[in-house]
Amino acid sequence: MSLVLPDCLVTTGWLGENLANPDLRVFDCSVTLVPAGAGMRPESGRPAWEQGHIPGSGFADLLDDLSDKTQPLPIMMPPAAQFAAAMGRYGVGPASAVVLYDSGPHTWATRVWWMLRAMGFANAAVLDGGLKKWKAEGRALSTEPCRYPAAHFEPRPQECVLVGKDHVCRLYDQPQVRLINALSADEHAGRVSRTARPGRIPGSGNVPAGSLLDPATGAFLPLEQLREKFEAQGALDGRNVITYCGGGIAATCAAFTLVRLGVPDVAVYDGSLTEWSRDESLPMETG
Image 1 (cartoon, one colour):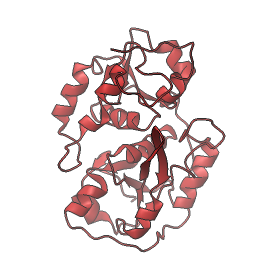
Image 2 (tube, rainbow, N blue to C red):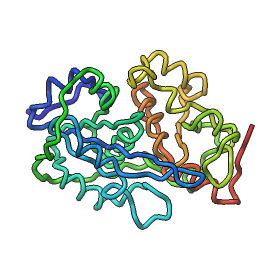
Image 3 (cartoon, rainbow, N blue to C red):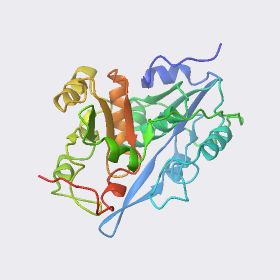
Image 4 (cartoon, helix red, strand yellow):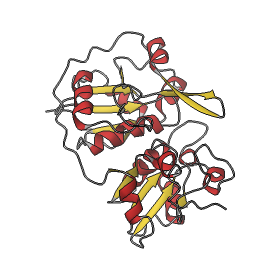
C-alpha cells in the first residue's frame, strides 16, 4: 500500500520517521530574493540545496522547470505538459507521497503545493517549520544527490484553483466573493509598493502571509489563531475566496491555510498585483 500523508501539513518528527519510505518524495522549493535596483530579483535556491539538504530530498526548481517562460510575468504556472514532465523527472508518480519545504517563510513550498493541487495531485504536504525548524532541531543534513527514479505524472487540471486576470475582473466586486491580499499591511494600504501602482484590488481584506507563522520557530501558528485572522477579514463566512499578493507566491500560503481551515472554494490569482497594477484600466485602492 502506498504512503498516505496524515495531513497537508506534516511535522519534522513525522518526516524524520518516514524518510526511508520508498514512496516518499521530498523536495526543497527554495528561491532566494536578492536586491536589484528598487526591487528584488529571484535566484535559485539550488546552490544552497547542494550545500546541505534534508537527506534524500530533491530540488524543485520554480524558476526553471516550474515556470512558464513564455509569459511576461515571472514564475507563472507552466502548461500542464511542462509541469507533468518536470514532476515525472523528479520521480513523482501516482503512488508518490510528496513533502515540500523551503528555507524561508513557507511561501515557495506552498506555491509548489498549490501547483500540485491545480494539477489534481492531492497526496502532498508542506513541512511545518521547513528547513529552519529541521536544522534548529539538530536533524541530519546531506549533500548527496537525489536518487528518486523517474516516474509518470498524469496531470488532471482543476478549474478555478489558479486563476487569471479575466476571472478576477468578473468576480472581485461580487458579494459572493472575498478577496484576500497576502502582502504586508503597508503594501496593502499603498504606503509601500513593489508593483506598477500602489495599493490593492478594491474591497480586499488583508492577511499578511508572514503573520501566519511563529517568528521564533518558523512553524505555522495554531489553527485557532489562524482562524481568527481570516475570520476577521470575512474569509470564513461562506463566500468564495480568491487570494493574491505581488506575484502569486505569498498568496499560496494564505490559500493553503484556508484549505486547512476547511474553506471549500479557494483560488489563487496567479498574476496578482504585478499583472493587475500594470493595467491602467483596472482600479486600485489605497488607504
